[in-house]
Image (cartoon, rainbow, N blue to C red; front, top):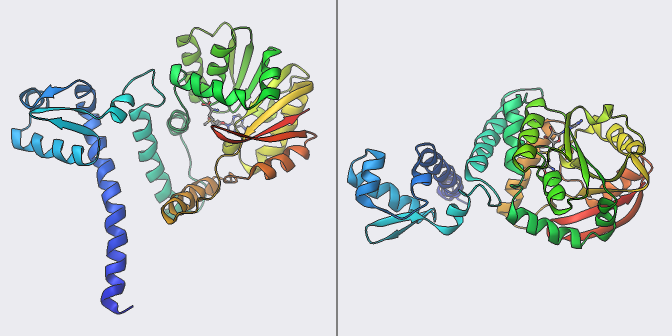
Length: 329
Ligand SMILES: C[S@@+](CC[C@H](N)C(=O)[O-])C[C@H]1O[C@@H](n2cnc3c(N)ncnc32)[C@H](O)[C@@H]1O
């Protein structure tokens, strides 16, 4: 390549990344100022001008940019959120736009911390809460339907859950546990969560779902959990556990499960084939590894790791949420 072609190649890549970053900033600003909430319903241009207190031509330009990004639909002099983004504004949908935007902002901050400093990026309680909210789904109808389908591919785990005592280790804001409790009204659950601010949000969500009489959340390091033979089924949110916590956590789960109890783990993801997917994967891996969290171990690695704590592999199942490892105590 000649020197002009070299520069052109770099500029093309930069422009591509820049467009994504600009789209995020635009949507984030519009969301913070309430445009997204306002545009859940179709609105006349005059009403949007009144709402935003901006000149009409400025409003028009913003709407056209949001429409080009697929966030807004324009119809004559009316504008409204497109169906996918309107869905992200409903509290009983799968995921919330505000939580995804907060996660994107935090990830960008963590990326620069990894490059700029030596140690692991320090996460505040609020940061951990942003991550726990951002990676999960809402414990409502859409998530429940999806989860029911997942359970159909996991008969051994489902049978263990039906026996009634369910443990969720690294429960985050407890979407998995709250959804399980909603699907099986006969079960009782306990969620273990390291970060008190995240555990407090899980407690709040359990109350909001009306299952706090059956679902307990404990703010505790899973390694210190010392109940024995008290649970039938356990889900371990392994993707978020650091190297040094993994074996002691698996040993605590092994103690806590009754003989024959079932442990379920999810394989986070595997390296994509396409270059854009690989770039995103490498950046996520960089952030995880800076926190000493092994990134995306395969289902086979997870099975071998659990075997070292005394578990037996039942099978690796393909589900609508990717590959899951089913293990037995
Ligand atoms: C993000 S959640 C997983 C999502 C969750 N399964 C759901 O359904 O919403 C994973 C959680 O594991 C917690 N965690 C990490 N290490 C832990 C440990 N040693 N003990 C307890 N919780 C831990 C993190 O604080 C994080 O909130």
